[in-house]
Length: 89
Image (cartoon, rainbow, N blue to C red; front, side):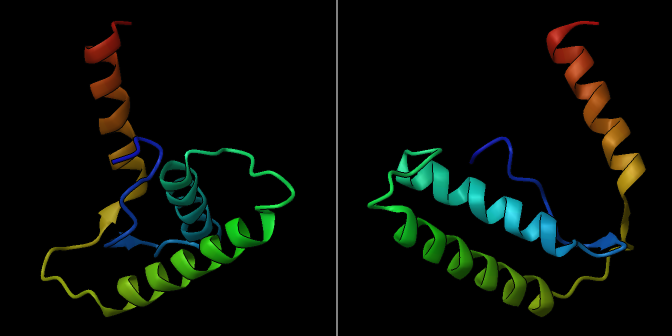
């Protein structure tokens, strides 16, 4: 999985439209192998991003969990700590 795609489920507040779209863009970039599509492929790239974003929204709205919502600040601190261990300070 692409490292830039983040978990969006079970956060308080819920994932924003920008976060959903950013994940969709990263997914389409990864699958297509192109960070900047050519003019000939731009329309297909944009359509794919919209389709993935919509599927992501539907998925996030459909998921249920008994776990308490995660806190974004706590999760960010955990990620920083993992990075410090992995890459050194």
